[in-house]
Length: 251
Image 1: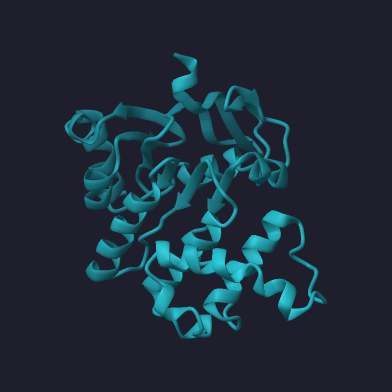
Image 2: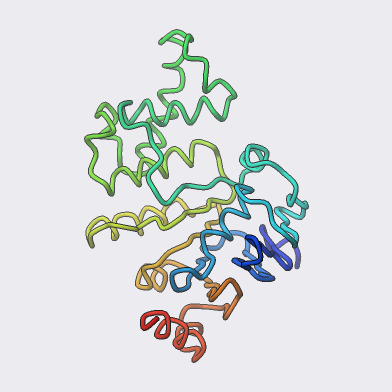
């Protein structure tokens, strides 16, 4: 049924002065799933993300979210619809406290993000919800800490909390475990699994161990095109996928 898919693309293409970075990608993301985009470096994964979230305009193709054509919509409109992206590089305010970072995200949802003149008493009304979100990502004990002092893995957890503050129906996570050690990776994997309840997650991820343990379905990109799609056990045995990864390592 069409309602089973929260996000679909048809013939999604992006050209840069004759170079085809994304070539006719057809993608279907099932509602309530954790879906990964994987592929060698230069496969077009982040470009696809930029097209989905309208940081880039497609050259051709169509994007549908919840059955509605969003190809021409702006990024802010997509966020209001519930399609929210977190970035490859942690996007938090380093010199605000952990709690204040989440509170700013909550203000964004309310349309008051730039009302810096509001009284502390007014802003404190958001604290209870901000603390709920911090507890959800195991950061409650860090609420008063200045964000720059957080370990790297905890900063990524904070980024997820600020994303959750926007009440996403579909979360797009760009390389959520990049640059992490094993302990942080395990923590973030469990966190993603936890926050996936009642929402859909589409993620770009380079760590195939993370993908195999976390994701319901995988789309493999190579040179801008879909090479394979399906469950990890099936895709990981695909000869074309193996060749693309091995070939990329030797290029």
